[in-house]
Image 1 (tube, one colour):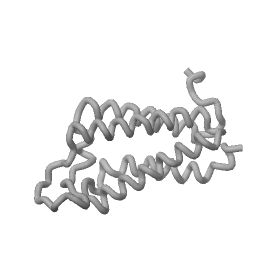
Image 2 (cartoon, one colour):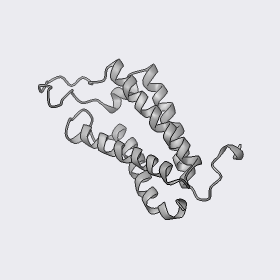
Image 3 (cartoon, one colour):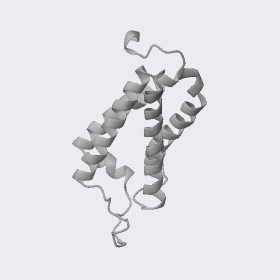
Length: 145
């Protein structure tokens, strides 16, 4: 089993691998059920071309859930590859970029579009992305040579 894990020193590659595998699992959930995505995006639909609605139902549709699942699958694959190629600057940058994009996305959805709230389901992906970003910045010189 140890031969399947990244062969680099430190815990960052293991963290990135764990987060990547978890993302792939979450992506599969997006294709099979709406319940998890609806828990995360529980606000009303809003945006530049959407009139404010008093409806408190989730804006999640089967299409939006599958689209989110496709993005999450792509992010998971990038992170898994980055865990095994952590000494390569391009892979290191890509996994950091997935975290930054996630932070921007969840920040916009919570504070601009109001489709999610800074609560339990929202804190999980935000915490993972924030930890990954800070840890990756702090350890950059150690891993990228």
